[in-house]
Length: 102
Image (tube, rainbow, N blue to C red):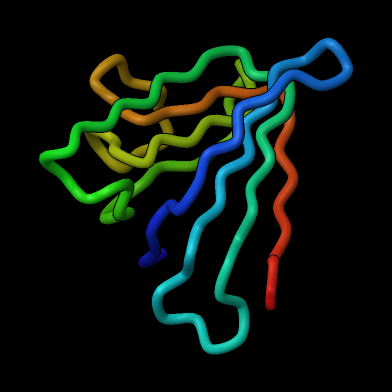
């Protein structure tokens, strides 16, 4: 996936922490924006510095483990393991995805 994250919404709903991630897809002809909603967050770690572009996705890992659904937008390695060296990660009980075409 070639894209960039344009927005994170972190919010509490129904006594559970959720994170919405909005991704602009760079080379898709029809679907330009994807919204991923991570529900009932177990753990997350996001980092930003003004020295870098805001969340351009060069590589990622995304899978379901015995702990929940896991994504890292800056993985140490592209594999199906949760690694302590992964950056910009979300671990959640559930995920839903939607295309937000305008």
